[in-house]
Picture 1 (cartoon, rainbow, N blue to C red):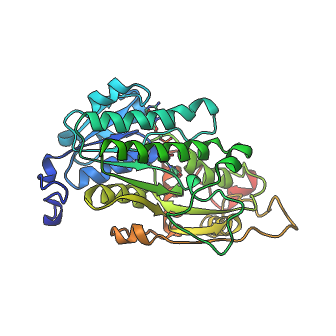
Picture 2 (picture 1 turned 90 degrees about the vertical axis):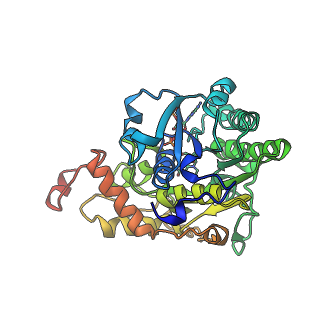
Picture 3 (picture 1 turned 180 degrees about the vertical axis):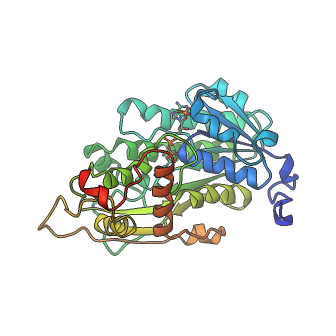
Length: 339
Ligand SMILES: NC(=O)c1ccc[n+]([C@@H]2O[C@H](COP(=O)([O-])OP(=O)(O)OC[C@H]3O[C@@H](n4cnc5c(N)ncnc54)[C@H](OP(=O)(O)O)[C@@H]3O)[C@@H](O)[C@H]2O)c1
């Protein structure tokens, strides 16, 4: 371990002795957060609703896991399970949340977050990081196209509700809950705000955001949406969590955006990187004006020390990983016509 990692910057405690809990440890982002913490020498406790499920087995194979990782059963809707999971922890990184528009899952995001912050405060946790989403930031049809998207921006809640983007509603409410509860309980909190997250998966199952590229590569999507979106690499998101945790002065939101692209540009990148796949070249809104990319600022995250991975590299590695894990067929140019 490099000497710069051997001392914690928060609390003066030896970093190797610090125990940090990651909720949703087996998910796409959670797994990379666990890996990053282990690489930096922390003792890590990961929560999962079923730690024995084979879907979490990849965690135990991570470097340092045998010596410094334990998995613990916890459901964010069960305060007592969280209180037990956080016992003895210096920090809690609250990543767990369903990636879903199902109205029945909104309480998992909101009440789950309330439980996490309170269980952390009750358990004497010294610092917390909450994973929000740019779904809580960018969804505002009335924002001027010249506005620079940054940490001051919030989505329009009513617009999200009317357009059935309940995931965005849930993340907005969960972030407000995390911030208010942490302030009320005197728990220092930083908020990491990832956008569409791509890059290689550590877990076996295909997660929601990785499936976006997979659906284009498989030809499942016959046309692409006339929309603009922001992208970031999963390893950068994980590093942002750890950097925000390690900086004692880090507070408030940290927007993690590497690039903003029209879907046509994402498609062009996929077609250039993987010409052997039947990626559609048709826009669903053919003939209509194209949605305009917006400006954004990732300055706060860069000030934490974060460097962003180029999207092309991230997408390339995501696709190779999906091939290796059997989610995408490895096809040659000649085979393409048979798909
Ligand atoms: N991926 C993206 O593009 C993206 C973008 C912005 C923000 N985010 C945020 O990043 C976080 C992780 O997303 P992800 O992409 O890693 O999703 P993921 O792979 O689907 O992981 C979600 C995690 O949430 C856990 N979870 C769900 N319901 C739970 C409950 N009731 N109690 C405890 N844990 C529960 C799951 O744990 P189990 O093993 O117990 O099922 C799983 O580990 C979420 O907060 C999401 O909103 C993701």
